[in-house]
Image 1 (cartoon, rainbow, N blue to C red):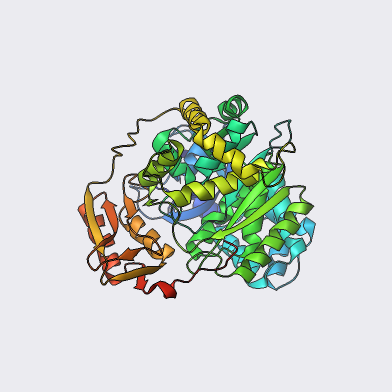
Image 2: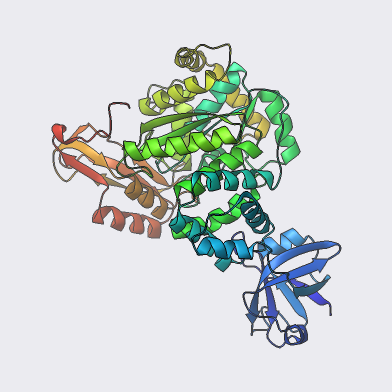
Length: 511
């Protein structure tokens, strides 16, 4: 019994949702249940979707099947086109999922089946949540993490650049600012190493690398065009959402982030599967450590490093892990335009360039350059500094920007959100702590990353002496209401600690 396709203008965020009216003859005949999986077919295409039942004919009529925005685009046919709907076969991996929920250890075959079903969207949100929580509570062992990482890398597209080495850099996140990738890529590419950097958009942070790069250039590029760009310019900074690399990871992230679940095993599998699928042979991994970072202590960072090294070795990936200071934001800006300003100031050797962003980027770029067999260990930092100081990194960045599709950007007068306020020091003293999470929240309440010019501009850092009433940071908000939300949040807790110089808590001399 065919139905007429109807586009339902609802963004269901990475979940295909189908809508049937309760009085639809097919709904009654087939015994469909709300939240069950259905298979929708049209013109030789098929998708799986979660069924929602509606009672309002203004949404879906009795002879129609509605599809959410993502599902409609994926099916690829016009509104009104006849479609057929049937019960979807249950995922073959459900028995393995139940064993994991019971606390059992899973085999390679088990995890391959689970990942395949997840990538094929055969799992409902309830089943996905059960898998994520079971892995969190059951703590995947090292072998399971390798099996999961390998399975995720094998599902979807896998790239082969036909050269060696292919380098990449990744940070586990949690530190506002920290746009080192946008400096590392042009430095490394200017040297000649192949560095195809695909990055994510922000989900819970004020900006991701893709959001910041989008201030300067287009980041959503056709895959074939991206490949030509990388081969020509030796690097790119594009959004990875259309690349189909480790697609199961994108599905899992959509469940993990709202639950604030980021277990070590799932973090390792997410990062390494994406890098292996993207054709990387060498990876530099940045693990920031700080009281308000994802990793809070050096022992925890060392355990995580060993786990990454074990799985990377099993997957044939050369890995260099750098543990860095995550006690405060990197750079001055938090938010797309402010972070783009910081990056371009460093690239142009501007006198106001944030020195911490420059030095961290040079350190990371130097370690990446040492993946080149012709560079001796310890020489990378000096080579990276020469590439940056000489202007070669700026030239490479400008070439990548033009190739991706340049957007207007005035470094001296960046277009910032119009509604501003400053947060002032309540007393005189020395800044001894900055809460990364608090400042990120204030920046998001101000409108970042959706409003590119919104965010937080830092005016004081850890170790700086401030006087009472001196501005600690300036907030740029897109709308008056967002300014009000951000202001209320900053009044409850500014995110700054002020005390005496001897109270500054540095995590470790290794930094």
